[in-house]
Length: 126
Image (cartoon, helix red, strand yellow):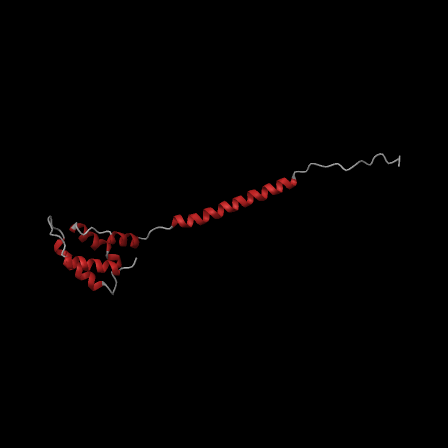
């Protein structure tokens, strides 16, 4: 055995490839999680309120103490909701509101007309 002097013991080689592989896997997973998070939130943020929904909200928020606001606001915002079913009701309300338009001083709305307007608003769907 004296002739076998060139065989040496086991030497540990410092190879960082496992650490690099784990680091790349971790970075890839983090980027994927971030991309999924952004995609889901983008869809939530992008949801815009439709013009019909805005008109319905304005109709529901009418101040019946201010007659001019009710007259002009109702006629403008109720128009997108007019269909075959409620067209006659809208035309009747429009005729009743005509006497409040284009005047400097207007009397307060009649209770019956307020009820008609409120029932029309309850019947519309955004």
